[in-house]
Image (cartoon, rainbow, N blue to C red; front, side, top):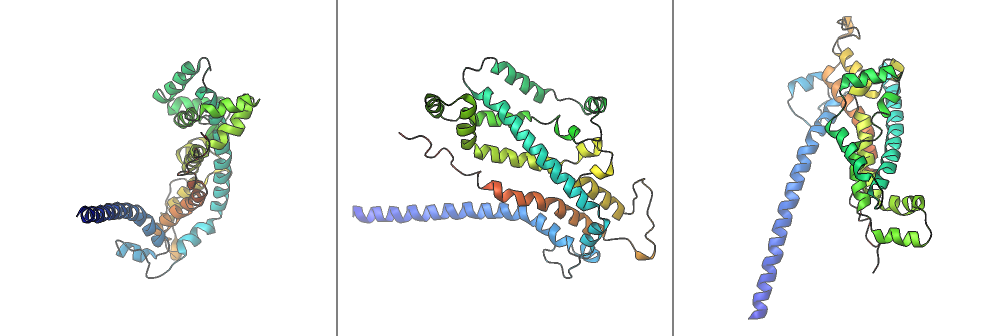
Length: 302
């Protein structure tokens, strides 16, 4: 009788577990679908004709494939230069940010570092009292960094919020590993390079991705500090392309398209969104594997 009761409980338990698992999977699938649908519509719309975009409210497969939007963007020739500039700015800025933030965060996470609380409070103060746009612009112009990539990289080289996240992760590393390395004769610099950095891949990969996305999507900074068109990022060139497709020239006057007619404005906006999104999406798979990786598993034995 007891065996029969246990079997019934076991069946009920497995059934309830499957029901809960099914609900969780359904909820996650619904969230993923809600997230993906707008982007899929933008991708489909970038290949659709202007007429179809106006007549149909929503679709995932265009009835007629049209490359006019991409052809118009590529024909301008500027987008290639913009992507090169964005790649350069994103690569240099991200590498510099990660080096400086890591070197800043590690000493603040170590025990016995005098004055670290005072330094940390000063860092937090910069988050509570940010510098205004006009004083920063006057500073950048005064030191001669206007129309230079230095204005887009140096002032934000150490992000206080990201630095604190890295510091908290360093603090969570096992002290026994540091003590063991020190007994073996390792210096502070060697412990940092050989112990702390390899164990911090998940947080460094995450912050690297966030920083790279921030640089790639930065539109306001280049618009304020860059003047030379040869230094424009992809976002600035795409803004210019979208405005031109709407019939507005650089000086704000209206463009007369004549007998050729206006280009597909809505499709160009969607194609511009795809062009600026795809490069940063290609980086994500190389970083995503570190997010869920249990890096501390097996690092301490006994």
